[in-house]
Image (tube, rainbow, N blue to C red; front, side, top):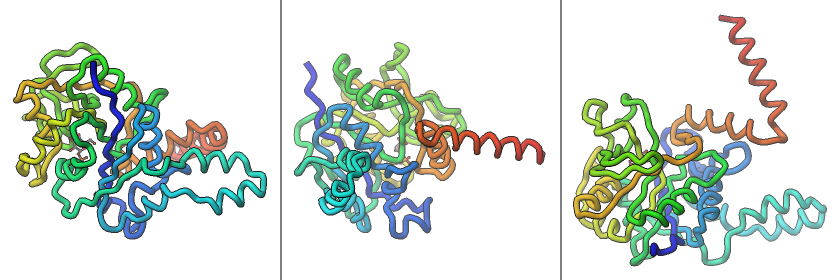
Length: 297
Ligand code: G1P
């Protein structure tokens, strides 16, 4: 029997320099896809997977995130008084239970592994999830929920995985596949950001993890790795070295890298087209744009 996964860590300490000047005053996790901040997509995905405790690893300048998760009684009252029930429901759906969110600060930007380690005391001796909000996954079923279901079957550690072109392996953690069972693969190793000719496969880790508490212990001993940072990948790879299982799950859904401008724009288009109230107008615009560009070429 596996233990229920109730806690998720959201590393949100990054400065988002790729989105300057916007991120001078707005945390990148508050940037919006259509009308919802990136972080809201991550929270909804976690809730759908049964997560009830949300741990944010923050840094200086991330106050807007805490404000976002506060309730807004005045706004709710005014919408109620005006009978704007639809908006009220949208607003209320984002309300979090009191005490469900905790914030810890990462005082130094030492890497993703260090950020996760900062939440260690709040995790204690339980398996836990990690969600990187930059990776937004669009699909019918929450990616983390798919992982929780897989975890209930396999136990061990599970990472979300996706094939990428070999020339992109240097942007990801990459799995050394032991046995490929289709949707799930077992692993014999994991490497952070290998060059194409050194990558053990092209199956990349996407920012969703279900991890044993022993990963936290590993992290307390993990030395700096790729890019001079303390890497989560290295602490997970240590699990394999110590004889514990690590699986990759090829999830159903489309992943957008919202940490990059191109990925963010693609996500905006895709989430825009997925919204019934916008679909017609927006897709007409895109078709016109496409014909204009083809005519000009
Ligand atoms: C992080 C992880 C990497 C993973 C990636 C997924 O890298 O270190 O293993 O493949 O997220 O998005 P980052 O994108 O923060 O450099």
